[in-house]
Amino acid sequence: MGNASSSATIRAEEAAHFGRLAADWWDPKGSSAMLHRLNPVRLQFIREAIDTHWPGDSLGVRPLAGKRALDVGCGAGLLCEPLARLGAHVTGVDAAAENVAAAAAHAVGGGLAIDYCHGDIAELALVQFDLVCSMEVIEHVADKAAFIAALGKCLAPGGLMILSTPNRTPKARLLMVEAAERLGMVPRGTHHWDDFITPDELGELLDGAGLAMGQPRGIGWSPLAGLHLSDDLALNYIVSVTAA
Image 1 (cartoon, rainbow, N blue to C red):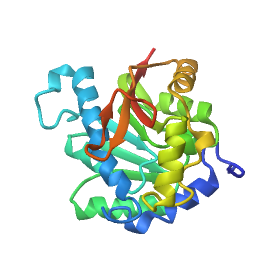
Image 2: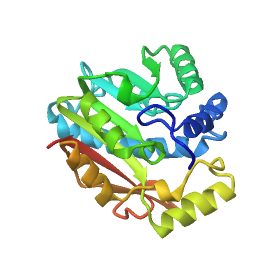
Image 3: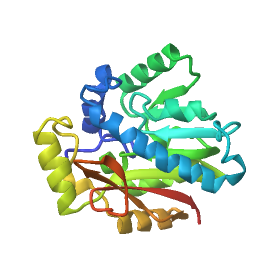
């Protein structure tokens, strides 16, 4: 994977790779097309987790009203914007300055007040967020334990964290690395199978940071259903996390 940068969690080459994609991140037919297909699946899980964690707000169209949300590894804001529309005051953090610029410009164009910042989550001293999300990021960081610990420090008491990541299985290697990248569905060099993390490994990292992992849900794919929530964790999974 190459050398880590001097930052605690950022890999410079990973930030550069995703920064090069910033210009067409919001194009549903561009290099991030797969993320556009994945985002509704993530949001389905997130909304269900929000409604379970804060059941008093489950009937509203803005269940995050009055709450602070943080998206770490936000890219150009594909998740930040729907979180803002759910009522949250949203902060997005990304390792690539190009992504932060694209995210801020798109939010302004949509009339959304979202705070974006460029940097390493381990060094930004962001705290007291009711909801902390990090989607498809942990497989790209230099130090997974430091990254999880940094996310935990951002979480307010009683808060909720949502993480998603590919699983390190033969199926994930075949579909996400060999097939998706070779067929151009995902930009080449996006995935490195050796850096994928299993649910058991993620659970151990969370436990070490004083966090408790909920029951993970798989994000599966089929020709008929496309990407969807599944009981099969072999390809990708998403999970809620709370303080232990």
